[in-house]
Length: 342
Image (cartoon, rainbow, N blue to C red; front, top):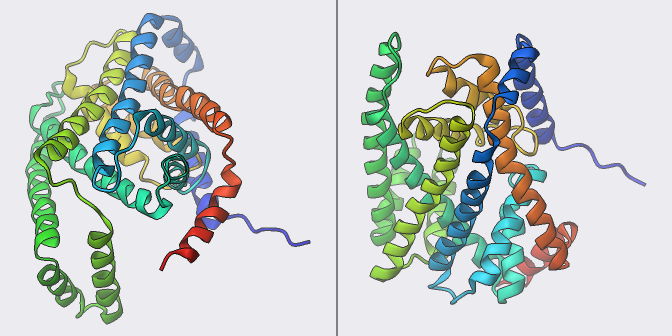
């Protein structure tokens, strides 16, 4: 009998999470934290919870638009699969929830997992563009307390950099879609002096990426993706504002957008399943820009994380049980499907 070695990336993620938790709790006054929770207005939890699930539903709506070039899918299948995917992201390492989400919908709609997964790549690109837009608006509109002028100036500078990056990515994707051969040649020529192997691999990856993705081309499809993307993130940011209000903090909307940007970057950092530690330290760091004490900031971070973790995990597990899907079998099924594909 052989024993499977622990995944190195998972161990690194757990170590990073442990370090973040140590840094967060080492100087915390737990009495002040208890006072912060005692003073919390819990009435804000209900609308925040409703908005959280509205955001997931809107993700399912956007997914429907993205899958339209492949097949007309049902929201009754898309929404549970979305919840299952985010549940799996909370419980499994390496963002395996995307594979679980693709498999779940593929089984229900009779679409190959690889084709569904390609739509999720586009889904993440839509998130990336929207977050860049949120970042841009935040950097130009946020007003920090007095004494934070240097940080404020740095944010404005970051806004210009973000805007330039936003335009560059849009232009690159446009050229990749409509002038694929030319764009790939330019990329390979730029990378070739550094590494011929890297240039060849990048070129092949770009061709595979753009050929495997079916982008909506109708006006209704494009506008549907754009509007739903904006609504997805509006309903994801609003609960942050409600959580701040529950702790007696009435900050402008740009503050919630600022915190959300930090949280988005936090989930990109290797961490334990559920983004424990990295999520919390990002939230506390963002709140410190508004001169909020460590104890109250950490209390807010715990509640925001719990709001995004437990409800979708519980409902996602129920959907998984209802659909009689085994996560363990997904990897095997996906591998067999890839072998069958030409």
